[in-house]
Image 1 (tube, rainbow, N blue to C red):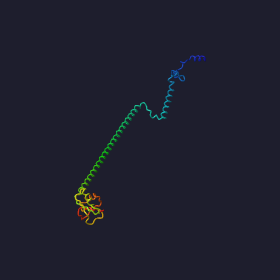
Image 2: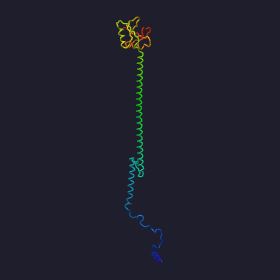
Image 3: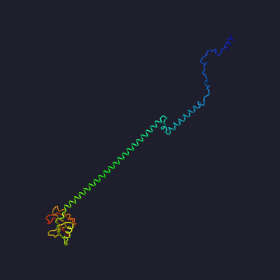
Image 4: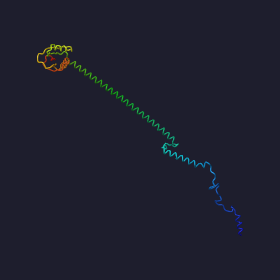
Amino acid sequence: MRLQKMAKQDKETYESYAKDMFDNPPAGPMGVHRGARSMASRALPYVIVVIVALLAGLLFWGVYSGEISNLRMPWSAKEDSSSSVSTADKADKKTDDTSKDAKTENKKSEDGKKTSTSDGQSKDASDANQNAEQNNDQNNGQDAASEQSVNLATEIRVVNATSITGYAKSKADALTQAGYTSVTPSNPTGNVPSQTVVWYQNEADKATAENVAQTLGISNVQQSSGLVTPIVVVLLN
């Protein structure tokens, strides 16, 4: 009996059992039994490590040198370029406007200076001409007044109160040479003053008396009443 059971068991095979999930494994090697990898797949980790190291070094250099702020992404190059061009154009335009404004201010300043100088010169010239005209008018007025006041036909008496003979005659001749037409030398007939003097009787004869005194070199001119002639010259030593 026992032998029959053992013979029966020996006859049971793989197909004698019901199949389950373990009877249908996936195709290909599994676990540690992997197939050979390609060269590219084996070199990829090293390439990644090198790239990361380069990027880290570049980042460190940029931070250390300060050039990281100048880095631009490829997609921002065009925008930065146009922005730089626009900024440069604005700067050039602003410079041109500043130059134009400076030129305009300089031109205005030069025009103002020229106008001021021209006005000042014109005013100075006008003032000088006005002063010259006033001086000429005054001189002409003085000359006219002097010519009108000095009467060369006024009767003049020259009295010799000195001990010099012919002294009154010489002074009378000097007045005649100066243009006076009515000059008479004489001797004193009454009281004489203490110094040489030119007397005149009326205010209208004052200018003539002063001119007579200037002609004879006499500084003392006085108004007096009761004179025989309008002007009397008394000569003393």
